[in-house]
Image 1 (cartoon, rainbow, N blue to C red):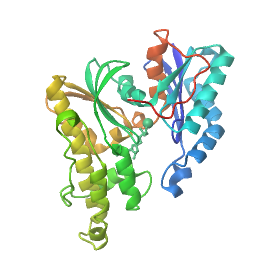
Image 2: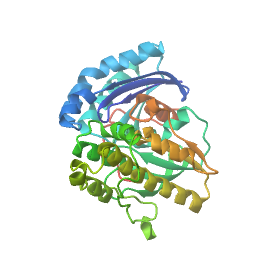
Image 3: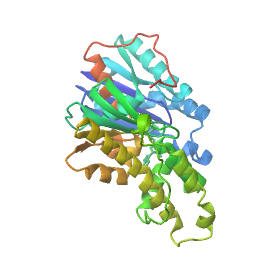
Image 4: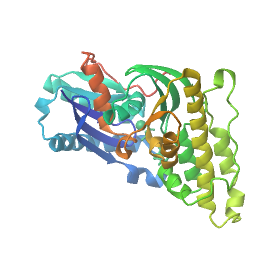
Length: 331
Ligand code: KG4
Ligand code: ZN
């Protein structure tokens, strides 16, 4: 089975061809980072216009690299939720036109669930597992019992984890996009240099939830000491101290979920899974099998969309051509 996956939910214009749900024949990712850099964030109007310009070339290249003709495709999977409406609509409309002209099924895929499914491209993972989804828009801990069955145990009550990385980097003018820059700076800093607070959400209904707004505000409020030169390595120390807490609170919640459910398998997905400290901490979990994607499959890509979409298509589940974009998905 050959499935084309199209991803345009934010600022990556991506397409991939996957064989039999798992074999990556191509994985083309065209990033708009340079176009949004001067604004230190994604500008939705610019993002959707660039997707419109790029999408046909990206899809064409993904077919060429895969060495197949479009007529050989068995189906098309497209990220149709959640994300920026205008950006999603470009991918959805293109996918619908292509599926219509080829007379093949189309499936709209939840981008967030596809992130969590990405490690299945590289590993054979049994269910159930504790899923940790950490991206620029979402932070979720879930009990995952099947490819489309998950029970959300906890989530962020305010900012997403990646969003906190991006906001701190933007505030300190470290650069854009913030996650990778903070990760790199942190490697040279002291994680104990600043004593930032952790959220105190660990009781009752909130025992698996996290909160990043207090941490973000505390980090931002260090600006005076930062400029006063509290240390020679202030940017590195700010980054390391922030990152240490931001990741530690996630690990603590995952540990709690493992203890309470007895499930000793953790699968992590989403852009923040590229974080070197998070990867280190996941591997250190004792008596637990941890899975996370290779770096190229952590951030937005078409392979995870094609692979996750294949799970539906092989069960005969598809959408009709009234498929549309949904910017927000209810939990
Ligand atoms: O999954 P993704 O590509 O897009 C969304 O679906 O949101 O995630 C992007 C997020 C951004 O917030 C980015 O700063 C963060 O992932 N990110 C990182 C790293 N690489 C990307 N955060 C921390 N450390 C990294 N190395
Ligand atoms: Zn994403």
